[in-house]
Image (cartoon, rainbow, N blue to C red; front, side, top):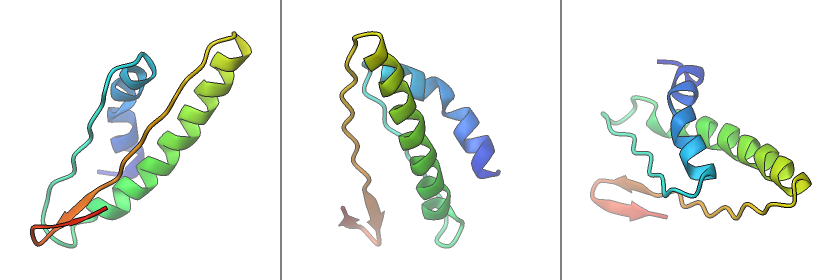
Length: 80
């Protein structure tokens, strides 16, 4: 699966987040399978898209507040 495919699959989640819903994305798989790489790229693209949407909403007199948290659990250790 490519980063583009993952981002496309998350489009509905992005729309839900913009509508005010809480959204959680989880990547699960073997060590070295590319989860961190993929989610890093997807997070960058998502941030750009949210920024674009926030500007559109601001132009209409609306406000979009964005809160994001990225967390990694590796060997049962939380990395924030």
